[in-house]
Length: 280
Image (cartoon, rainbow, N blue to C red; front, side, top):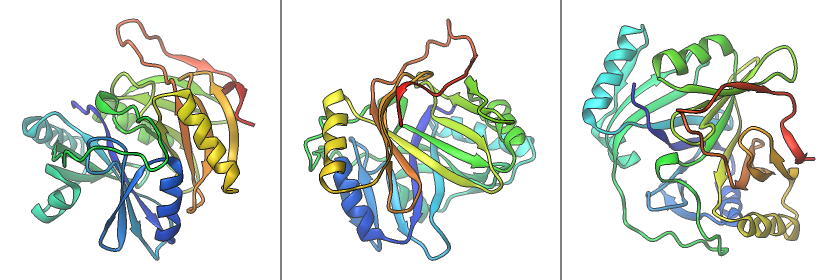
C-alpha cells in the first residue's frame, strides 16, 4: 500500500469558539465552515477539521494521502483481502473533505481512517495571525498523531503489514511498547500506545523555526493558556517542542527541527528516555 502522508485529522469538540481562539493562538488560520472550523497551516484548504459533538471529545477521523486513484483502488482491494470492511465515500463527503476520492475504514483499535487521493487546493496564501513563518508539511504531511489503542499488537500489525508503515523505533516506559511509525521521511506520522479505550493523546504541528516555537510559548504564558510540558528536545525525532493543553483536554505538540529518516540507512532502536532535556 502506498500511503504517502498524514493529510488531515478531524476532531470532535464541545467548545468550538474556544478552539477558534486556541488555534489562532497557535498561529494557524481559522476558517468557519457550518457549525465547525477548518484549521489551515499551508496551501491546503485545511489540515484539521473541528466539528461540534455531544458524544465526547477526541479524534473523529484521520485522513491518509495516496498518490492517485489507482493507488486508492489498490489500497481498497488490499484492505478487503485482509478482511477489513471498507466504504467508498460519497461525492458530498469528498467535496466536504476537498478530495477527489476516498475510502473509509476502521483500524483494530476503533479509529476511523479516510484513505484519499487528489487533495483539492484552494490556492489561498497561508497568513498566520500571529506571525508564524510557516509549518513543515509538503511530502511529510501535516505532522503526527499519538493514539491510545485497546489493541496495540493488532493495530501495529494493521499499520505495518496492511497499510505499509515502517517502525522507526520503540519506547517501553512500562509493560507495553510505545511504537513510532513512519510513512515518509518524517520520523513518525503515527505513534501507538496501549490504552483501555481509544484515545487521542496529541497531534503535532511542526513550525519552520525555533523563533516560531519560542513566540508561541510566550503567547501561552501571556494568555495563561495551560502548558502540559515545557520546552524540551526529544531523543528519537529530535524535535524541540512544548506541549499545549487544548480546550478538549488532549495535547497539541508545537515544535521545530524534526528528524528526517533515510530508509536506506535507518535501523530500528529502542529509546530509554523520551527527551534529552526539558519537557518538564
